[in-house]
Length: 170
Image (cartoon, rainbow, N blue to C red; front, top):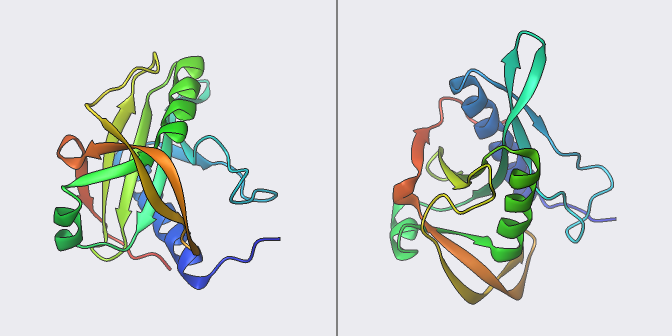
């Protein structure tokens, strides 16, 4: 059993609050992938779906990967205004996008700034929607700590829509 820290639980609450706010902004519903039974080694391919209301019910409009972190404008500048996502996660989500014929988006949440960015990463064919660069990098294993080396995609947030959160995560 994995015991989550207060920081990890808080990051999830901020991610969920940003997701709810974005779904409302887009006049959509959302559904999250289940957490029960998951572990840091066996997470779902993506975090959530945006659902469009249709006369006959709900239709999947897109899939999202959500990352909530503690960073400010200075930290973001030090990172070159780039967000990173693992190449394997990008490939998995792009495959799901292609198979379900919906776009794949990334959502980056700054707890420190109470802001979030949304960026389309792949189109309905699973093809990249924005320029990316790839590099093998040592990263933090999780919000709980530790390190790992993996190939990451670096995406410039200039391609993302930035939103200031109206509510705080509880």
